[in-house]
Each structure stands twice: as C-alpha cells, then as structure tokens.
Length: 114
Length: 114
Image (cartoon, rainbow over the protein chains, first blue to last red):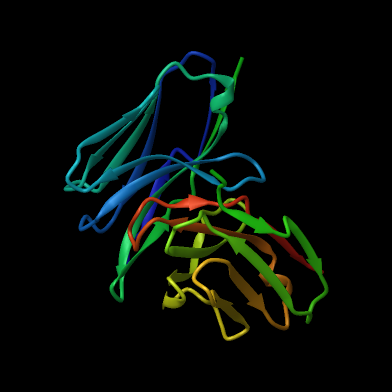
C-alpha cells in the first residue's frame, strides 16, 4: 500500500525566502505525482503534475522535481510571498483494481510573513 | 469555464439523519471522485466514477455511504444514519479522462453531525 509523507509538517518564513517542500512515497512504481495548494476552508488547487517519465515541471516561481527511484519529489518555491501562505499537498496514484487512486500526504502548512 | 461546484457548502445535521451532498463536475469530464478530509489530514479516497458507473468504491467506509451519477455528470453522495464520526469536509474532483489524470477539485461541503 502506497504511503506518502510530507516534511516539514509546518513552515514559517519571512517574505523573500526560497523554500523547499518534500514529499516521499514508499512505492516507486508510480504513474505520476501531483502537487496541490489548499487555502483554509477551500478545496484543492492543482499546481503541477509530473509524469513518471519526467524529472521536473515548472510554473512561474514553482518548480517540482521527481526522483522515482528514491521515492521523492520536491516542490521549490522561489522568492516566497505572503500570498503563498497555504497548505501544500502531494498526491501519488496508487494502482487499485485497475484504477489509479491518489494517495495524499498530510501536507505542509506554510506561512510567509511580511 | 466553470469549475467543479459542490452544494451545500455547509451542512449541519443531527445524528441518525440522512444527508445528500451534490457535486457538479467540469463539463466534459468523464471521471469523478469523492474524498473525505478531516482536520490536519490529506483527502481520503471514497469512490471513483467513470461515466455513470462506479469504477472503484473501495474507499467507502461502510454501507451507510452510497454515491450515484445517473447521467454521467452530476453526482450525489448519500449518507444514511449519520454518525458524529462522519463530520468532515467532503471533496469532489473531476478529470478529463480516467485515472490517473490531472484532478480539479471543488470547494467542498463541510458536514457537521451533532
């Protein structure tokens, strides 16, 4: 059974810092990995989707890397801003009866203060 | 275009009552997922539809939970004889094709069982 761990659980930084959020998974036979952002009381917003054949994906100040063999993904946030404050979750599809159902980590709660 | 919508946004019910939660996916998305999220946790998979049929219902916790998607668009999650432990945020997501495509989430329904 796939298990997904996110470290750190919480992070508080001053504005402008470059950040690294970590996601590790136990079963490296994955199809893809998706990073989400969740604001308090809201649903999840997709940030980046990395296919298993890819090493990284970039969108604006966000860069996500994937190392399948070691079971790790990293979300890099450049020049953090207060608006980046949210919980960041990673999800890895787990093969189940022919479908691939995502297993989510518990998230990293990020606060960027001015 | 419109994203995934869920109604109601909040639902308070008494223990033992029946509730229905509605999800309206993005138009044209054939895959629809239901998740449950407790405070401080990542979303936990409940059921996945491909078109009108439930392709994977392995996440439903017991037979009090049931979901339908009769016309392959809107889905309703039904909970009978609610218990206090059912209190959580219920999230719906849709994707263009089957698993494991990129998922788009609705804002969720916060269910409170008193």
